[in-house]
Length: 326
Image 1 (cartoon, rainbow, N blue to C red):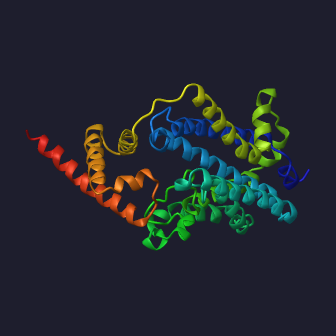
Image 2 (cartoon, one colour):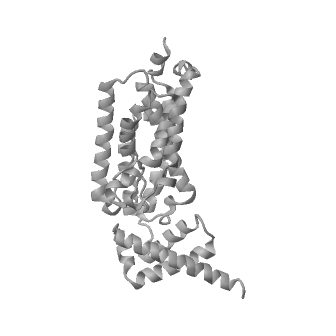
Image 3 (cartoon, rainbow, N blue to C red):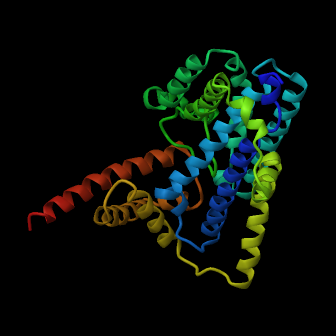
């Protein structure tokens, strides 16, 4: 059988990889749900190892999306199947935006992973027939772009999908074009290299044992799993909360815990304790803290928070330095 026909067969290894990524995503989302309902420390899933875990999951999905795009259309675009799949993904992305806008308006998902996959499916068509090395080079440039092209011009919400704004928009799932489209391109490029090496001639004949059946099933129904799993998990945690509600923390304690967790990603505990106390004191003085609690996303409030952060950083560094000579 020709290589391109082999590649269009279901490949268990890819379905298993996608299924494992879905399982990892469910673990992360369950932890996020526990945080949302107050069972674990606020901000925990946005920093440290959890942050790395989330990025690894997103990277795996986007990489596999690039591989799948090449396998499906590398020898010629099958327009009927392409438009059907794109409509399903884009429709699901729109549904998530609408649902999260009403559920969490202050951090709704306006450009999450499904939005990225939908747009990448369009942009990626330009690369499925290009040389693998050229595609890989472009992938590297896309990943590097945010380090060089950020500008206040992109701070307008209409441009947040690019990922090039100087301020980071608040969203429960933010996967902009730069740098994440580069991961899709990497998947396309490495799929091309794999075909050149004859890998796709061998993979369709390899079948995993029964142990992999759940992962394969999930991988073959990834969109349905993605859409269903989070409402189910939230419902389960909500039901548990009706029986054993979490301990209630004040908004101030939640702010300090979140600030401390984010700060300790880059600084030590002593600095972060002083810094976060400074932040909440100054923000309470001018009532800015109320806007933060309410999920205000205005440029004015973000500018004020950045100003206070700079002041508190200098004050904390100076206080620690002066204390060191006592």
